[in-house]
Length: 346
Ligand code: PHE
Image (tube, rainbow, N blue to C red; front, side, top):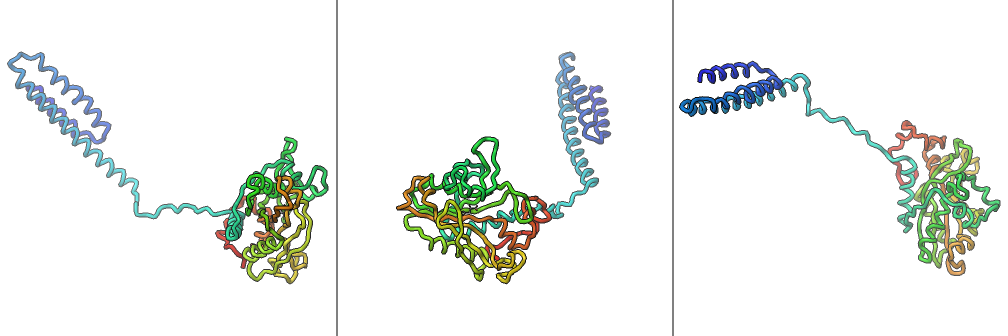
């Protein structure tokens, strides 16, 4: 009995001296799991008469020390938290670090305003591949092998014969007609094109184009003219003068180009428009009968129009940017200058 009393005294004194969690755990190993456990086990070695009294006291001691240990541990955890808060204060009322907002690339913004204009006229978006076959980029567009018109497009060829990076979005015409004809079609085909050219302030080896295609049984040149005039006015401003002049493309007949009054001088004549007052914005025409035949449409029954234009050049003129190369150099000092671009030019 007296051993139990002195064990209690010693254990409690030591417990009170513990000032950190590690010491408390060591205390637990030494007393609760050690000496106290031994003391309880000792019951069986005592003469039967002493057992009940001793057993009762030993179990009470065990219970008491366990409770003391638990409250000492909880108190120490509280103190540890208070110490850490005092040494590294945290002000939860401070505003957080602002997240850096991204923004859309100027080409994406321009593309989206183009989509919106054509969507209003009932055109859907059709995606077609950037890696094409010679056949779809040229042959089926009425440019058989060795046709001199192929020289209009400087081409990146891959090491696989007949496989190339598309030089324009026009091969998309073949894909969409193959998929949907003889149903009527009204689509735009946006995407990246590639040309093997010297990079200058006015031309890049990669750029976006948007192709347009309408196919049906009563499609006329007047529809083409109306569509493109409406587009040019919404894109470049209501007051902008638009003209359509005859041109040549192998896959359209008749072919035309659309000019608008120069974005800089508004028709007065300046360095950018080479003093003509006009800037060419796109090529277009009625689908050539050979192209219709290539996708098994009867040109006597079906007609259509197509147009194609570059996205970066007009954006450049509109924003007064003097170097085309800036668009794809990924320099944030340039890109950050265009937080948002409205649908129509001022
Ligand atoms: N694909 C032509 C080009 O890149 C543009 C065009 C498209 C012309 C559709 C006529 C019809 O120059």
